[in-house]
Image (cartoon, rainbow, N blue to C red; front, side, top):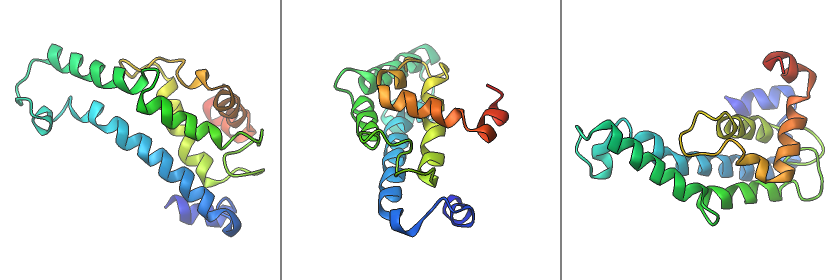
Length: 151
């Protein structure tokens, strides 16, 4: 659906398809990376734990999983670094000079990481990447976005 609407809105230009798809794939990889830390809370038996494991142990497992993700050399840190590398040329957007569906795909993930509601994920994790922080703020300064979120 995102790609269809992106084509209609001019946010999925043919000359950037490969780069856009690469960024979308990276965001999806971040989602897959984080999935076990969500899923273990509802289906611990999928990870070798009994279905009736006490909640306090599940919370510890979740914290442990997320702790490894955000550790100095953790996979989430590494992937956010990859994402930030798309902004190395001081471009405003992930795939060039204009907003694309890649930005529309990535921003919700960054919002999720920054919202402070994920146990074990520091609220300032994204802010540790200066170009990602500026990018995130720039996106939220777009008039339509600003109005929607009422920043």
